[in-house]
Image (cartoon, rainbow, N blue to C red; front, side, top):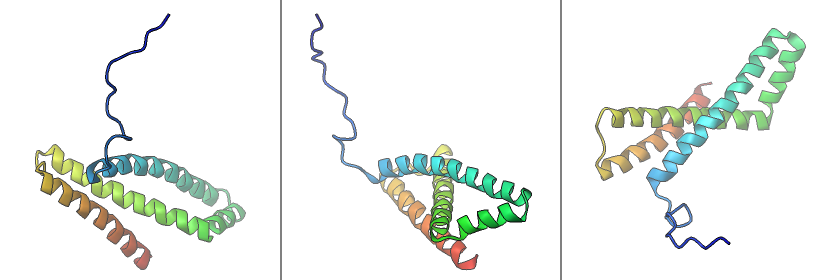
Length: 125
């Protein structure tokens, strides 16, 4: 017969209130996964180029649709967010920016930079 374990449980996501630092950490992982999936779409597009005019036109129709453009916009934002947050992590790896106000400022700059760079890319392209 098994007895109930009386040890306290470790706190988890349902106990803690989300903070900017934890949300940005989770978002970094999610954008990394999204970039991997998006890279498969880039491979599809390159294969369509190699496949000839008909397959290229099919791929362009997909990526030129409203859904395709939305995916490309999301992928480009994920790319810039992951890049900016990666630079933030490099700064931490160098031993700088561990004071709590600096951590929060860096997080806000990361989010702002990702949106600004994405919008600039789409305005120029």
